[in-house]
Length: 209
Ligand code: GTP
Ligand code: MG
Image (cartoon, rainbow, N blue to C red; front, side, top):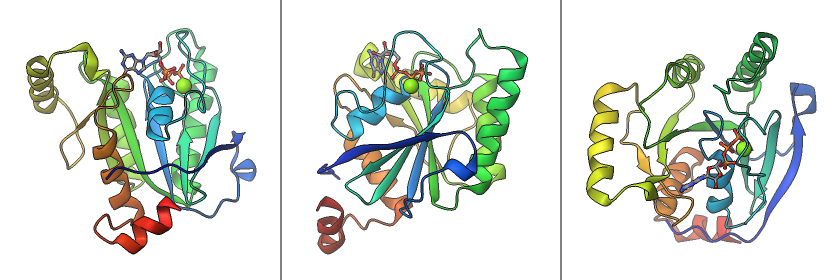
């Protein structure tokens, strides 16, 4: 599905549920290791250069950031994990913040877990997947920075990652924020979770407008 973006806006940042925005639209959250490319992926999905803040310094996103796409779909940029330079206390409050979000956010229809195609799944990724499953939330795995490899090497990595990882039910989506590869496929997968029938032109129109 080639999703047409009319509007993409930042709604607010929050830590505690009392501060979550009252958008009332189905929502998809994005999570992954710090510096994996979450914010870049969100920007690519909504065709905006700098809606979600990106940086070459890891650990920048410490709050839950809420965005609204076409007035109808919520995107949530969750703070990354695995950043070495955080204290134990910070790590614990991160865990509480994420766990609370997953258990309390009624609008949440799915989580996109982002991994770097060059790396094997880390312990923290497995724990994150476990947490998402425990809350019964559908999961999509994305392997980003695919542009770092040729097509042949990408396939080799996918095979290796599939055989050695905890994965979602479906195959991981290969993605590149640099080339836009995988964007349509990821929108397709998100569309399924939030109930956009891609072969229903009426519904497509409503989301596109
Ligand atoms: P934190 O919020 O700090 O945890 O990082 P993040 O996961 O949001 O990552 P961000 O989008 O800020 O990207 C981190 C770095 O990776 C930046 O230097 C990006 O330019 C680079 N990057 C992100 N996605 C891609 C990609 O698909 N390909 C390539 N080559 N580089 C990427
Ligand atoms: Mg970020």
